[in-house]
Length: 118
Image: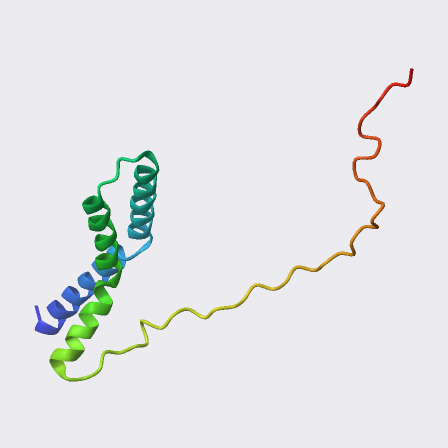
């Protein structure tokens, strides 16, 4: 086996593991963990250290690639590539079309209640 083949296989495995750890499964687990923290906070059973560990774990899990790129750039003396860390493009929501307001004498409940006459 050639060294290029083994290094490319290792790199492919590392990229697969990174995608797995930072993918939708990890995001779902992090959302469930933060939601359980909120539930524990509402019931009054939340320890501050436990909450800090969960939040710190989420930051480390999702920020690991940025930290690794920064450290690699510092070691090699070149700035870390910023292309992967660019925020997604923001598209503001469009305003809904406004309908004309009903006349001020309009009563949507007129005739909804039946009051018998004596």
